[in-house]
Image (cartoon, rainbow, N blue to C red; front, side, top):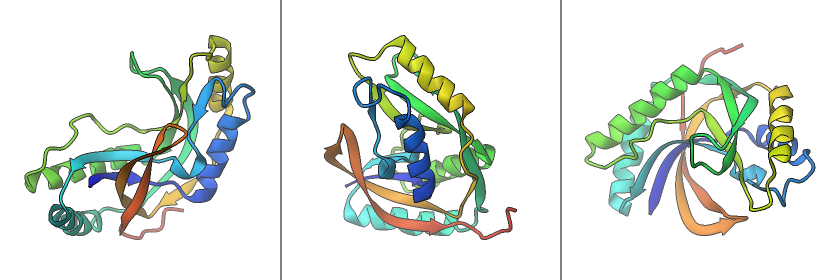
Length: 191
């Protein structure tokens, strides 16, 4: 199975963000939108692992992630076609992003200690909203980025991280995933 660690926004936050992206006329033909329930932020990609290795990953991550404090976030702004060669539009995550990056780096270290090769790309603080199509225009992208720049999503507390199993099945060109386990973060008053 292919595994990855991810941050899954609450359903209402996913729906709100997807609605913002869909509110710009031309979406669907100029941008293949990610369905709301598939909006997530990948923290680490572990690649193909056996069932036994998956159990080891789960056990080790459970211990380590449980020591990490809860985090607070919101979506505000966006970027498109970055870095060079990328074909996506992304929503920016703001809030406890330094802590999130630290948690993602810790996750990669834990899994490397178990002997797995981990995707070495740095974790991003961006969530893919969609991919451009052959009919995408600069005007459409600018309208979408302007809408995202004016957007300040609802604040939410991230109290867990998820271990996902990705499949070869897609929905609108986006790989589907199944939540294998949710790892609770330390509770804390973030208000």
